Length: 201
Image: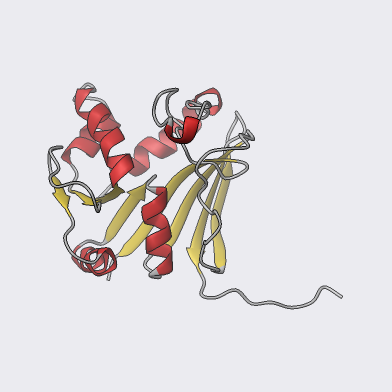
């Protein structure tokens, strides 16, 4: 069985909405799109690029799929991230889309949890990028094996959050961490079962 890895950019207060550009995702009147850009540096860019270049398969929710499908096919073919995202096998979880047009994309059919479990059996690793609503479904179904979190030193106060009300209680184990010149922190966690509780007294 392969691993399912969630890759997410978040603000320090957990907002994942619209990191890449001002108009990326204005749902709910979100006004802070493009918040990641001031904290991007060469070192963190290389880590992100290298990870994407090594993608085996990509799983996306509907909103992230639509953002990516409108952007990445228009980028230069020789750009490493564009080259891999355009060529990688992509699987889309959506209750509303009837078809997907981005090259090498497949719309998942039937129960999402069952479909994703099958994908994990077909690939050594399946990566999720963004797709906050889908991630909650995957966490509830105990399908997430690793969380790749990029946390940036900014507080936004509003917007879609990665771990909002309704998040399934889950214990995590930190397996890797790194900091970058402009303040980004990269944290890699593996799922470690249910939380345990005790007293500090």
